[in-house]
Length: 148
Length: 148
Image (cartoon, one colour):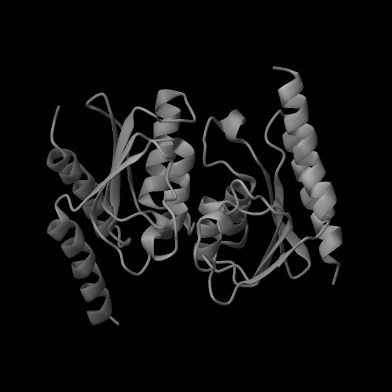
């Protein structure tokens, strides 16, 4: 089995695609039995859709790929702590495991949710490649501010 | 301006379409300047996608219709209290107003969110056609149980 760091690097590659498309750089991948079943990066601007977060796009792609509306044997890797919407989507997916890189104090699910929003069986890990995942966001917003 | 009850009846018609398609009967519509800009009903089974809730489908349709990723002048009517995922999606949409019919003690956002998950400017109303909105759900699950 490949390491969390290996898959988080692939999620970071997705985040990099978002950055290059001038989107907030968050990337996600979904892995099942050591196989990547879905990828996604934030496409809010491109799709003109406030719900087009990396996790939502990856989940929808994963459901289609597997032909199931649940992913109880899969792990989602995402570069940043999921927001409330994505946490709720992950709840419905019954995903086995969520691994995220950097925390998001402003928009992360922990800001709002008093109790764990995920399915009781879902395991949570964080801090994987934390500094790289946070840095790509910092670089993006720094560049945004300097271009105003 | 037409009443909340008028629009909630249209959301109930969407919920009825869901029931007829053997989906959990939740319906939503989005109204802007007294014009319906989007409709949606739960299509989790049809789309094989655990995130295909009435509100999410209506929001995505509304964004496309208006050509904007925000809906700060719109009102969403939904028959049942939004779940955490839908509450998060509504936050990102910056929608002006959310009107829902019946509460959902099991899956509603209030179960999990310690603080209001919506945008600070979003107004919330509930209890519009509450008994009809609750009844269509009760009928659906009663039928499901009897057919097992």
